[in-house]
Length: 338
Image (spheres, rainbow, N blue to C red):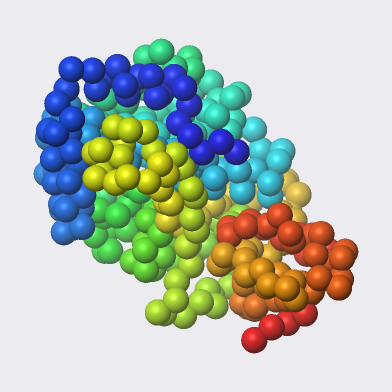
């Protein structure tokens, strides 16, 4: 998987940046970040095209990379899924839609839904020279936290990437219910990889299970989460930064590591069960003795499992695994650690 933005999207963003003072974009990006940390809603923070563009410059690369990684993981669990339609809920500048079209080129119908007209305007502009489904996407201005979604929002695949962070806890079950009602087959939720994002993700997971959804991942089971605070479950995706991206965020490194949490679920139906896997939920630890992985396992437990170098067959199974990857439950399980 290439975590970099598709060339057409990079070009579209660069064209929109031409002639715009970078200092102003950096100031706006800083104001947006501070506002989101304070819990303010995007309706109050993103008031026009300049704010939307600052958001797109600083956040769209990470949104794209996180969604693309989550879609790659779900595809590994269910490779026969081939959606034809997409609802990008809380679309913002549209990064999740680009990730979905990259993962599933057969998508021919896209709907972008957001309550913010500035985001919808920018998303449409950025996609004008992109894939046909994105260029011709339906536009719906609606609030996930209030009222039923329009009937035309229903799609095979529903994605809500960083879209539920502003919704009050009391309104979250209703929003999840509306999104799940729009999902013809699959739903993917991506949240920030913070303790609060994880806790909200667990609430989303519980609500989906209550409504009859089958959890695909990242959890390899549908039982209670075995992780206890102050620890939390999250994943990381490294992505490249452009020069303008670095300048807007005040950074010097040519990359950043996006921390995120995701939940994918499917409707019950005549589908084969997902393969039994464990999920790597921390960076692997490699030593002279071998590799130690922290695994969330199908039996609902978390364990540190050692794969010693003397067991070449076991080591071959895990040597390329990274944080967030799935380990099929076949072959020798390794040795339980501390």
